[in-house]
Structures are given as structure tokens and as C-alpha cells.
Amino acid sequence: MGRTYFVEEAIGQYLSDLSTKLKPYVTGLLIGQCSPQKDYVIRAVRTPPKEEQKEDNISPSNLASIDEEWITTHASQVSRMLPGGLLVLGVFIIATPELSKDSQNALRKLIFSVEKSLTKRRLWKPAEEEVSDRAALQICSATKKVVCRTYDVQDPKSSAKPADWKYQCALSASWLALDCTVNVNIHIPLLATSPNHDLEKNTKNGLNRWSKQIEDSVFLINGQVKDGDTELLEGQKKLRGNTQSSTQFSDVKVLTQLSQGSSHRSTATVQVCSASINLKGAVKCRAYIHNNKPKVKEAVQALKRDIINTLSDRCEILFEDLIINEGPHKKSFEREYHVLPQRLFVPVAGSSVMLSDYKFGDEAAGEIQERFVEMLDQSVQAEDIHIAEEINTAWLQLMNYRSVEQVNICPVTDNMDDTQQKQLTKATLLLKLQQNMGMVIAAAVAVFASIFSFNYFSD
Image (cartoon, rainbow, N blue to C red; front, side, top):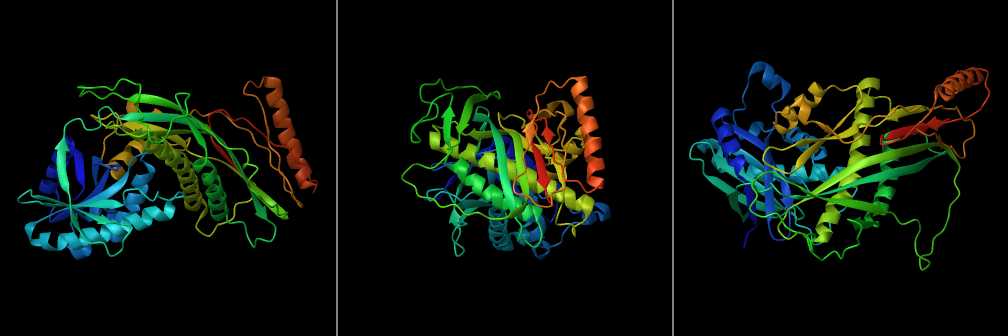
């Protein structure tokens, strides 16, 4: 028996509108959530046109012109905008009757390409029992006939299996949300023997190690440790008969293990390092889960992945920004301090779920609105953009080390008075003078509240 997809009713109208506007075909992504019993589709997003298509008003003529790389890039961008619990769970194509016979082959190819692209970016591995079927939705623009099939992305030789596609009103109007703030302090030493300090590569290696700590952490939901197989809503009142958007929030605390148990043996290796990368701050994390008797382990897994994804995605966005501003040739960044982008949330009409994005401090609301239109085909009002993390001014003093073993950062309290600020400015100027004379003196101060910062020290 095939899988069943329960689909937000508004998606039917969205797909119908696309079929009348875009010919001879249009592709897009399906966004939702998998569960052992059912799958839920809460958004469908068409593939944005490329710049040349916008300028020349050109429409693709046949399925051979499908740009696989463009679609997978879109999927990667969209996945960054999804909070925990949501994923790209399929692709769709709306085509004229003449192209319908070749649509399924095109869909199969796209499903595996998209999944391969998304898997490369992940710092976590899927669980053995996890659903690996992805949806391939085919719609005839003339007859409006809908055909849904699934492919197992874990099996490259997977054949199509039939699936049910059922529309449902207010599908995600009362989904459950789990919120937490995670304090991050990751120190990544760089070996002196390394030929050059590739910032992106070394950061990802450090995040890989940190992600394993998150996977092994203990999660307190509303102050309690709950068994994974129990229902998340056990002992709570479930909202019934409510078609208005409403969210039940659970507050989550993350307890990271400081060390392994005494039964584990470990060895230490001393290595000479010439630089270090420090990731510090407090990141806002959120996951959504369906309200059909969800298990605790489903909710915790979704939140774990959001914690890992949000930190990894912020670093990726920063690296891309640096490449745009500095050029692709610059792979090493010395003695630099960067503020990573803030997280923000935007509501989905008729749903309790909010989508996510990231902004740098100098980005205006208009840029965020444009990004939502391009990536998610969603208009956003400026007042609906909810910034999850506040910006606080941070100071940093850097030193050029000739022999580096350890870099220490000392936090300063938020309530600096004018005298302290003047002393800080004076110290900064003095440090610059000393560096010019070849003297090696280090001092670092930083103010961290809810902002997340990135510090990189090198010789």
C-alpha cells in the first residue's frame, strides 16, 4: 500500500493558478513533514525563473530544457528557510498533455538530484527507521488530473509507487511548536602544519564534531525529561475544532554532556596550532510538529536538526557573503571578526507554522520581502517579519600572533559606562600603535547578549 499525503487545501488553488499562467510546463517543490503514518504538505513553491527568462519573457518549450542545477540550487536555498520539522519532501510538474508522457521520467531525475544536493549540506544522518520516500506530483494543465507517486531516495534503483493525494482544510492551523535558545561556544584550533587556513572547510569540520554533541544532548520539554515513545501532548489538552491559526508552544532546555562516562576510554593528542576559530553566541531554534498524536522522539529529532542546521546555515551564508564581497579567490581570512546573520520568522497564511530566514544587520526589510517572493513565492508585509534575535554592539581587539597556542576572549558586561568605553577606544588605538612597532600584545573583549558572533584569529 502506498503513502498518503494530506495537503493544505490552499495548495490546490495555487497549483491551479500556475497551470493557467505558465505554459507549456512549470516545476516546483513540495514542502511539508514526514511521519511514520502520514505525510503532510503545507506549501508548494514554483521554481523561480532565471534572470534571462525574466528579461526576455522566454518560456521553456520542452522538458529537455529543464535546468536541473537551477532547481537543486533553489531547493538548497528553500531548505535554509525551513524551521525544524519541515523539509523538501518532493517535486511537482504541471505540463500540457503533449508533455505528460515524459513528465514522470523528469520528476524521478529531479527527486534524486534534489535529495543528493540537500544531503551534501546536512551535518546529521537520517535515522534507520526514517521515511525516505519522496513525492513526485504530476498535474495535467488541461484536464487538471493529479497523479502522485513516490520514490525511495535511499535506493537509486527505486521504482515508482502509487500514493494518495488528499486535500484537507486547516491542515496545519494548530501544529505544535518547540522553542529553545542554545548558547554556543565552539573553539576550533587550526594546525600550524596546514598549508593554508581554509575558513569554510575548517569551520565545517568543527561543526561536525559539535553536531554530535547536540545529538547526544538531553532535552527537557517544559522542564521534564520524557520518554521518546510517549505522546508529546500526553497530559495536555488538545485543541479541537479550531480552524483559526493557533500554536501550542513548548519550552525546551538543551543539556549538553560535559564529558563521557567513566566506562569510555579516550586518548589525547597534542598538536601545534597557529590559529583558531571561535564561534560564540546564543541562537534561537524552533521546530514544528503535526498534531496527530506526535511522539516525543519526533519532536526532539526535529529540534535537534534545527539547532544543527541554523548554525551551519548561518556560516554558509557568511561565507557566500564574503566570497561576493572579497572574490572567490580569497579562501583564507586573517585576523577578522564577523557578525553572523540574525534569524527571523514569517507567518504562513492560515497556518500556525512560521517560515524562517536570516538577515545581516544592514539588510532592509525590502530585501527580505524580495527574497520571500523569489524563493517561496510568498508576499510578506514588513510588519509580519519577526526578528528572533536582538542586535547588541560588540567590540573586539585582535592581535597578530607569531606563536599561537591559545587565544583567550574575555566577555564584558552589557552595562558599560562612558568611562569604560573611552578606555576601550584608547586601548584599541594603543594596540594598533604597538602592532606597528612589531610588539605582540593581545587583548580581546566582546559583548554578547543574544547576538551570535564569529571570531577568527590567525598569525
